[in-house]
Length: 436
Ligand code: CA
Image (cartoon, rainbow, N blue to C red; front, side, top):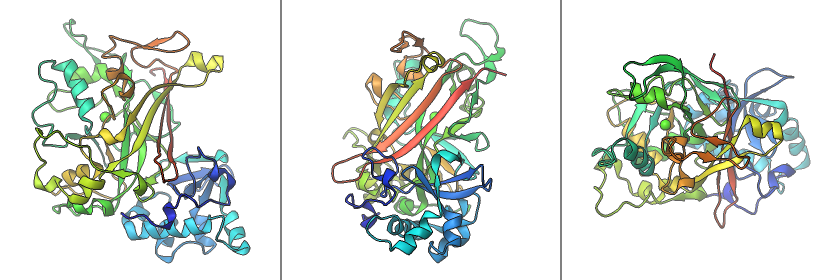
């Protein structure tokens, strides 16, 4: 995926808020989402620019979109656009980039675009796609090693880890948009020293900081997707919070893996940042020690090895009920790097389809918890507090081993490097409600 004029860091938009240095959605980003407004409850596609949304349905009616994407722009979700593939995604990005550029549009054209802009604060941001299937991976070797160390100190990393991108099938139906309340789940809990489990509200509720990648055209059942085709099949990414009930998980996960400890809710950020927008931030896949096995041939591709990583910085922030009452700002718990993932997004896609499993437009692939080795780079409380043995201490004196009711978890992410315009992923928020 090559750089083009849409990535030029010198370009500015006539939407002034897009030009602020710390804006998540400058002209170089142009992420896609779905929204509605109180004045117009129709669910419709939009593209974020600064603090505005460009309504794609209105833009199509105003004759502003490239012909091939007009039918897809009428849908209430991104799925039809995802099915069109990378050339169509690029065409609409290029057109919108021109239309919103401070230098290019003539006055009449700009007026037509202005009629399609909606203030983001007046919109409700919805799930960007119908997510037919959701798979969550385990691509951070640091996360896998940390969690393994708690369970099996003598043998933290299982022997398959460096060969297989480990994953499990999650649940699409319970993925919610940022801002939706998260009800503390009930489940079977069994303390190690208790003779039998009880059915009760989860006590050890956790977040997991992840990236979610949306699948584009996908593959037919029985066909594989070569790793070299990944750039044509991955549309873009969101922040993903894979809420996890650790006490339910501990009791249920053997032998088939997580189930009700994970599928009560997962939250994603509303704006899908395209991989084309992230092209300036592509980096080599994480270097592997020479002693590690080389991946099997279907997981090797020159472009993926040299450009399959993404230089993203990902953060977790917490706002407790007490902090909210006091008017405090959220506290940053951790800040990690997506460059430290053992498997690339392309490898996750190619592995998923390697047995002929069909992937469809709108399927979501979770990266797994993004963690590093240092404490303040660990992407969940299980790791950060080392199973609750070393609690998180907040500036106001509160402590957390796991999440309390009234806690709001806020994920943020951005890409930043010299020579490129900083772009953001926006926010992924969820507030914990008491068990029902
Ligand atoms: Ca996870």
